[in-house]
Length: 99
Image (cartoon, rainbow, N blue to C red; front, side, top):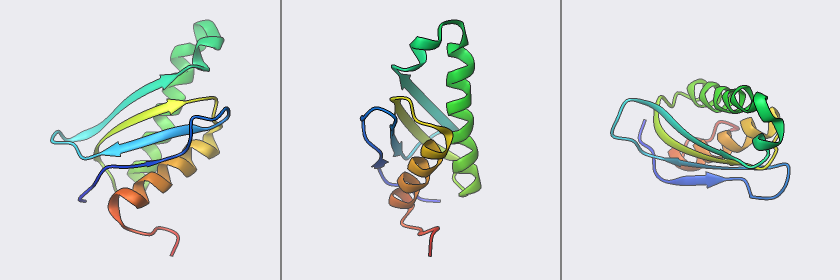
């Protein structure tokens, strides 16, 4: 599936900014920056892995298996992450999954 650069979300508290870009390498490459994760101390690894899992699962459900993704989290819930990833994917591919 051909991708173009796209984004969805904001940097407001409780949200997440998702940026999707084409990749020359197979697989999903996710760069995560979460200022909220640092509040969880030892749980930071698990917190970050959950965000990456939601991003990965959502993209794979949409048929995207090759992309660079940058996620800037400000405390988004899983449902918000999924919505933002879906919106960015629709913008990136031009395929409307809601139609």
